Image 1 (cartoon, rainbow, N blue to C red):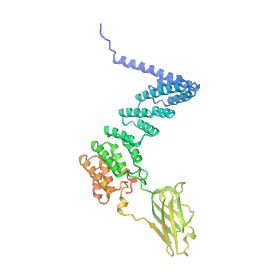
Image 2 (cartoon, one colour):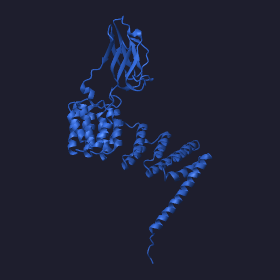
Image 3 (spheres, helix red, strand yellow):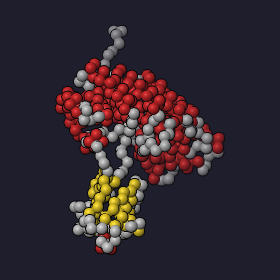
Length: 427
């Protein structure tokens, strides 16, 4: 009697079920038609239309993106330049609509890379703007970050411009691991340092500026991991260079032993250990003490009797590690049964955590800042772990008691986290 009839919950559920069934039939029918055409070699624009219907709803159907690429490659040989330009423009628009359905679709981003890579003059400025729009919606979308790095490389965007872009996103939201990571890639490009090692050290003025930025981040949100990871990168726990720690030659055992700073595999094509006896090369077979010849700190070889002749005043043994361009030499004197040469390592050096930041004033300043934060956030494990790291880097023996106190403050889970990674530390 004039009232609008409202469907019951059962009727609504039934209507949705029927709608889903209808969509599924259309989906399956379109998919089957695509595969039939593909098998028959009918790679025409109708396949683009069919795959558009499916990918527009489900952009993660990887096989259909392959079909579209096959069709586009076929049409490249049949269309005029004007027709191809219109086709590419439509394809880019379709891809953007798919990204709005799923901004983290692997297949869609990959297809866009493929398409742009085939254009004679891609509009990279437009692509950078597209990345900016999607990152404004979700600044943590690592698919979009990967695509932006691809675009920036192709367009030869200056690293300074990309660094400024990360500034804008970090300022808007400190909790952005991708932005922090991108900075760690860009800064060494902007400030190349000779002999800086694989991770790339930074000039002190740049380092201090970055430390100030990341301090603002973890003082704002101490529980966010991304800023702490970037802080650790700035401190630069770089792997120390390979070193020959000790060289020992024994006349009784007719054996020479070499000790490295870390486990190494001797004998590969690039990692060769050369032995010179009295300035003449000597071909020997290197082995580990257990005979397994796996990466090891210690390697040894047998020496021929001629290299141990006691009639000469002395023999000089020089070992050259070609992979690290390092060498060490020792002398076996007449009448002596052994000769050796080793590094002199102080207790402080032995237990120091390897950090590439060399100026203790910078480390000391960071330690004080972290202690200030720890007073405000006494249970924050990231702050506690960083304090321990800094104290080990500065003077582990001086801070020994204080370090143990901080370990006691850590919760059991955090203690396990730190001890689980302790095998990477020299201590």
